[in-house]
Length: 202
Image (cartoon, rainbow, N blue to C red; front, side, top):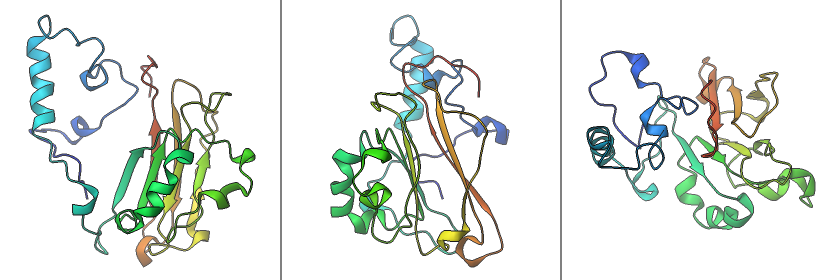
């Protein structure tokens, strides 16, 4: 289920794939190379039109996914320490999602008094985490929360991509076996690309 926007006029399914590392994709240049509206009026108009036609909804209006759907939220949390309490206070809104992907968590798990236990959200398994690539822990960092209703904790497996996170981009993939009691295996990816990154490779 896709809540954020609709895909319009797509002739090939590959055209719907958005690569956040591709600097040739105009969506990665909003506020950067196309900031001068006069010089790039046609390009800017196309992007603006696409954004205007997006069907955004507030979290309160998002229905819980059915057994045949997987409801996934992706959110730039801009520090889990500063915003975890807000999530806990709005747990009924977040509990509707089967998976929550958070980026820019700015979290050093080793410095938490109780480790991952300090980041628990009611109704979700302990989060799968990846520390920020920056040694300062400012910016970056990924967390994936999986709702207890869709699988057992042992059904969650981290996919080892055999690469270290860099300041150019961070990725975290997990595999959920027997998702929602079906025999299907689901792969979820959480990706963060720093706005300052100019890495064009996926």
